[in-house]
Length: 425
Ligand code: SDX
Image 1: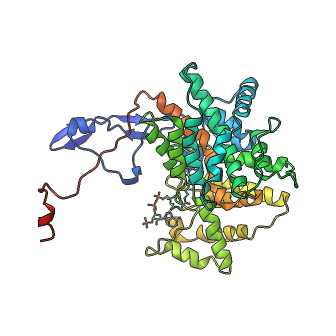
Image 2: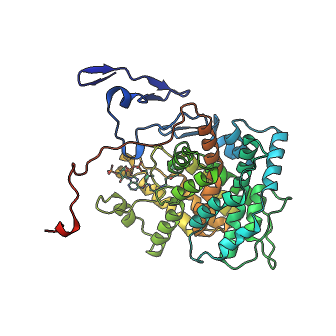
Image 3: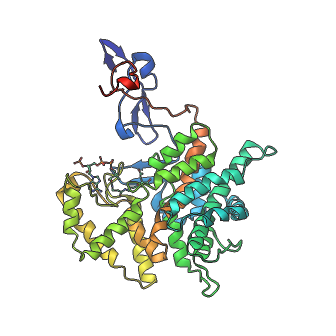
């Protein structure tokens, strides 16, 4: 019930399958002439979705109803990608057909290599990736003799498979190394590792534990309802532009240090603590200081007001990987100390700030040998099936509209144009 200027308006309540409730204001402007104001959309839902469910208070994350803990334990990244996009876990036949399609589309047009060769060597891989994905539209246009569904399915496979190949290519070209082509004999994750690290003088030996860790790493990043980059994909996609352009917008949004770029920022922060002698107290104090814009990277979340379930699983991968590789990462000790102190500090407790997915993910990537400037690229490869599934869902959404928020104007009232000779007098 809303009362405006003495008039009462009924506002329907939308209830989701997990009991979430929303006030439906889709007729508010038409009926009352009012809009709502909600910076950062903290209180605003943008869509109904059946893909991912999160409960921020209970630390629950499910994809198509399946808890992230079970997917991390039993699934593969390719299978989880299929689940997100198609809504069900694939049968053995469906999975082998999907895998064959990813293999079929794993090569990158040879002319795309020229792009890499003319980028400044210090260019950030996220900037390269975003522009390469937009360029894919020119190399892989939809074909008129295919149905829309066929074109969309092939575009999904091209993106999922080629993004991974492009990432490995950019890494090797930036170092002046030979590019390794994907192999039809390797799984999606094993292929990536081989393309990244294989060398004519030091062949990369596939380690199944690292392959498993990479599968889980990408499963943990696969989707996360209406986060910043997914909202960017949906917003750009709402203009009915091609999927490559919408995904490129998602990559750009993910690049930000408050979002996917946090995994790189966490390691840079831990390294800074390590270089300054390892004392975390000054950094905790800075994070609490209102006058200091420093934030504890990898901590806090818009939705999770409890431990991010992905961070728990990521920490388990860290321990498994480091003991398997007999590595001892001093940054892990610092991360553990930081977490221990922060979780006892009233500022973090009162603000409900816990480690998020990015807090330990950088340590996993370091153990795999991934360079720090590629950490967010790794996040993007993982999030791609989520972006694709959300974009696809928006196509079929009966409530779909072009995204065009309103505003409240706070500028000058009407005034006349002043000829240049009369200005400044
Ligand atoms: C991801 O949305 C998703 O689902 C994202 C993601 C995904 O999978 O797509 O989960 C991936 O982006 C994880 C988040 C990675 N970012 C970081 O780790 C950067 C550090 N964290 C933050 O900057 C922050 O916590 C955000 C951006 C993640 C969320 O912030 P909100 O919800 O916009 O909240 P806010 O910035 O308004 O902060 C609320 C209060 C403020 O204090 P007050 O002014 O109210 O006193 O909490 C404080 C903030 O100062 N705060 C922090 C803090 N995060 C919030 N203080 C210190 N350190 C932090 N990390």
